[in-house]
Image (tube, rainbow, N blue to C red; front, side):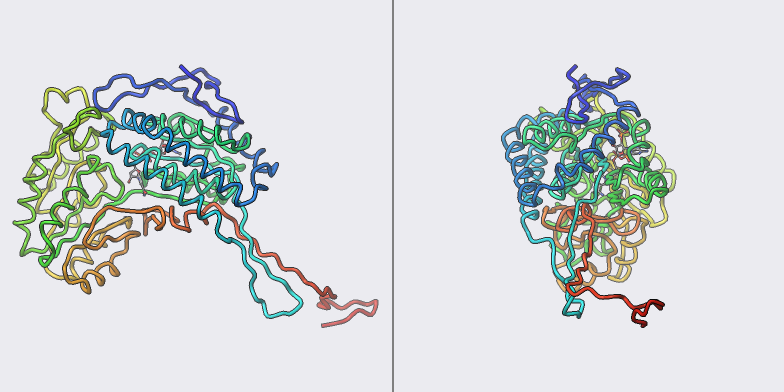
Length: 497
Ligand code: NAP
């Protein structure tokens, strides 16, 4: 087994010798074996990141030098795209073509932040005093713990690693233990691109073992986390005693609203994609369908027909349209979620169980599922399944559609379909979600901010704000004509106020 922890510029095994087997979600076969870090390894990695940051070895690079580094990493990712996509596909079980799209998005992310780094960051402000120069400068925030999920493993960490490097931070990266391979490859490329020693560190291991040290250690300045709401809350609590900066990208339960005057063919097709892409393992999945009553039957019948035809299959199946769930325990969670939906009165129209195909029996495949007759207060409507389960609710008015769409603790994304663009704009304005698609569902670009309202998170990734998360802002006030303040009485005869 090659050493797979990267600490202070060196690849090594866990100090305890512990390892973890990565298994294919498609058939349970062994993909690879990696090191599993101990808490001592984490503390060492934090120490290395802290030393490199405090030494100024990287923070003192110019913006241009750091942008060039990030551009070099983008070039290397392009060079290795096929290899990285294969690793991502092996770990997640997703089709190779989807992993290839993901890697292209990763490259675009690195290019975006490299370009952003070249823009002017600092500026002068006019404080109304001729003798004062007042300057606002941006500096790296410091040592960052970067923690990612398993659904888009490399993409989600790219949204953190690229801005952290452009900003001049040092970091400890921790991908999900289920999907570590692409992160290992990325760190190798960062090494090849010649980042200074100690800037990039990689820790592998379950969050339950390594998470606490990564998110509570006083030497860490910022925690950037993408994952579930429960973990996010635990991290907030752990970060509080040392008032760490937090960037949290959490779950979503995303309303997809179809009005009767929509282009229904396009709306239905996008509703199927929005809910069942990557078997629903997408934070912004449109799994909560809201449909205007007069077109309910047409829309739902067609979605059910299409959902029943979706072909499941593994990474190598060229005819497959979507893949397995990530793990057996996640499959169990989705099964329980569906059982609860049926119990609380949701009408199961299609799917609802594990795939019964003989050739998929070794993997974690779940059938695309549609629940009709749902109400806002149901568990299956309010909770994220993170699986291929769509719930359907009806509405009669624009106001009602907005109210239902906002009736959730989450606020990540939503979609609205109508050919009346003024109405669509009113609904988009009314929805309290971080991204709203009008007559579309799902696309994003690194140039635009991504993140959630309410309990979907704190802060934004991507766009220009995605870089700001990694910067501190300093105001430097320079008095070019120094004089006494004169505030307190000076018995030696100084000026009084
Ligand atoms: P998760 O269970 O919360 O895990 C996310 C990461 O946190 C993993 O690396 C995990 O490690 C680690 N972790 C677990 N416990 C931790 C702790 N106590 N302290 C620190 N780190 C800890 O989430 P997931 O199941 O991987 O991902 C699915 C969730 O992510 C969904 O809710 C989805 O909506 C959300 N998500 C959100 C976005 C967004 O942009 N808003 C994007 C993608 C996913 P191990 O897995 O190795 O134990």
